[in-house]
Length: 461
Image (tube, rainbow, N blue to C red; front, side, top):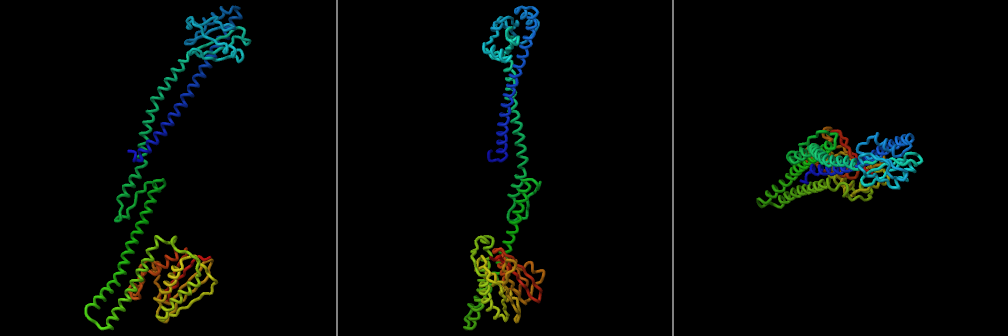
C-alpha cells in the first residue's frame, strides 16, 4: 500500500493537515479562553462599579451603611452573580439573596490592590471576584461582584467538544479530497507509464501523449518524447550501420572464399597460384581497412572527445609527414601533389595519430578521385585564430545533391566506381568525427568535373 505515490502523498497531506488543524484548534481554544476570562472580568468590574455608585448615592441620602446596602441590593437584580457590599475592613454589610447566607470572601491583598488601583480581581473557591471601592478614598467600603468559573468552563467545554468532533471530520474529508486530487494529478504519470511499457524496439516511433505542454508533467512527457526520438534515430543509425557494414564485408569475404575454392579445386601452375594469392592479398588488405575504419567509427559515441589523448603537437610536422606518405599514392596514380605551408609554427592540442589519420584520409580521397595528370594541393595557414587545412583537387567533383551526404557513413557518390577504387564510404565520416572531436569544423565545396575542396579549421594555441 505504501508503495503507491498517491497513498504516500495522501498520508503526508493528512499528517501536515492534522498538525495544522491541531495547532489552529489549540490557538483558537486558548485565545477564546483568554477572551472569555477577560470579558468576565470586565463584566464583573462593571457590575461592581454599578453597585458602588448606587450604594454611594443611597449612603449620602440615608447616612446608614446597612440601609443603603439593603436598598441598593433590593433594587438591583443580577442573575447568576453574587453581589456584596462590605465595610472598609471587608466585613459584609449587605448581600444579594442568592448568596444564601454565605459570604463572598475578600482577601486583604485584594482590598489593598482595590485601594491602590481602583479595582482588583481575585479567584477564591472557584469564584472569580471583582472588588471596587465605593469612594475614591476607600473609606466607605467595597462593592464586590462574583461569578463561578464554571460559567466560562462550560463554554470552553462546548468549544473543546466541537473541536474534538469537527477536526477529525474535516481531516477525513480533506484526506479523501487529497487522495482524489493526488490520483487525478498523477493520472498522467500512470498513462505515461502504461504507454512507455508498450514501446519496444519495434515501435520506437510511438510517442507519449502531452496533455498540457506548459506544466511539469507536460514538459516531462516532452522530454521523454525527445529521448525516444534520439533513441529511434540512434537505433535506425545502428541498424543502417550494421546493414551497410555487412554489405561492405560480404564482397571481400565472398571474393576470398571464391578465389580460395578455385585455387584449391585443382592443381595449378605457380603463376596461377601467385595470381590467386595476389588477389587474395588485395581483398584481405581491403577487408583489413574496412575493419580498421569500423573500429575507429565504433569509438565515436563512447570515447569522443573525452577519451582522446590530447597532447601538444606540431601541425606543420604532421602535415609534412602525411604529404610524404601520400606522395607515394600520388606518384602511383600519376597525380601531382603540391604543398603550401607559409604559416608560422602551429601547435594543436589533440591526438596526433587521429590528426594524421584525418589528413591522410583527405589526401587519399583527393588522389583516389583525381584522374591521371591531375593535381592535388594541400594548404596550411592560420586564419582567425584557427589552423586552416585546405585539400583541393582537380578530380571528378561531387554533384550538389550529394554534397550534404558525403560525410555520412558508407555513403558513396558513385557506388560502382568507389568499390572499384577500394572505397567503403567510411573515410570522410572518420574525418568529420576526428574534426568534431577536436572542436573544429569541416566544409566541402565542389563542382562536378572541376574538382573539390575540403576545408578543415581546428583551434590552435
